Image (cartoon, rainbow, N blue to C red; front, side, top):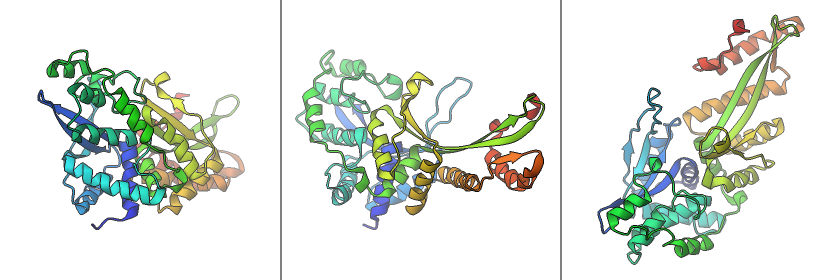
Length: 358
């Protein structure tokens, strides 16, 4: 099997961010079909790399081209993805992931937080023939939750609701709570890995999936607001995770050596089912840059381009060149800053400030 440990941990990191485990229900018996999927809306180069990785592992995978968003109807699109739908293939992947994870961390079950639990539950409900219909459906609707007691996910993010499944299987009102003991037993056996023992490739995969590297600029005016005195630049890094992955923030910070950041709940502001941290302190950003470069750098095409721009801007900030003055003795900076501005605004017309509008 021609795969490396670095690759295994990188694609486990991609799975932690952009991957997921699902189960499709077919027929009235029912027949359960597992799905392991990795989606990427931006870093599309990681998908063929992931597929090549699976091929070298001896695993067949399919491709979903995705569906673009429709601004007219406000329908959210679906990013392209790699899909593995064979139980035997997913078991083979689990074997590879489990061995690598255990050999490095000493923990038997790979991944973190909800992805660790969902991986186990998906394989359990598809391979255990003694489970009742009600237990299987309860497990099916436990996936992707933050806690077992949380409400079921809305039907717009899954194929059918619990009520629809219960009606099809003739178990109306019987599935809720049916697998509570099973889920609790699984959760009690799961152990979190020490994040400092997890190879850095895992965290690069997480950042390639759910990280963000940002450089912004805004005009600063004179007191009478008659002209722009200088441009002020800002640099920050974000990590955005689904609700059931909240503990991964602290794991990431511990692995990189960052101070704990405030976790923002997007449900309160944008209505998205996600949490986010923002890293703005210059010293913390420098730590993260050192960590990423020390691990060989990001691999996702979009994330890598954003990261390199942020790093270049950070270098200029350390040289004291991050304010472009339009008057006085700072005019020598114009050539440097013009090049930076061009990179920041290239292909991002929505971020260009119309100075004539003020």
